[in-house]
Amino acid sequence: MTFKTSLSAYHSVYPKEAFKLNTELVNRFYFRITLDDGSIVYPTPTRVLVVN
Image (cartoon, rainbow, N blue to C red; front, side):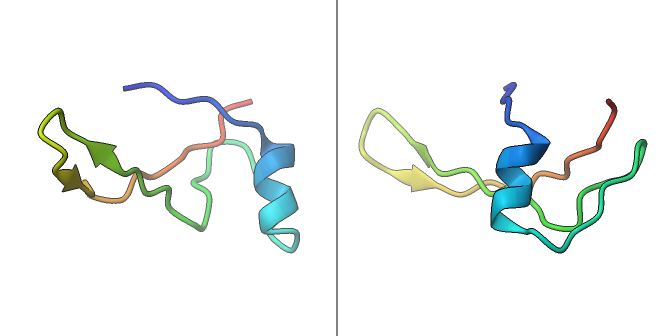
């Protein structure tokens, strides 16, 4: 799965966090997946690496 966001969108939620290249963001992303039968799954948190 691939998702896209921007550092400006992330920074609007976490304004005090500083970004550095080739480091992970402090906060994790959590995705909610709804299956065809209506079941909801929350997989493990996703780490995000700042690459450019």
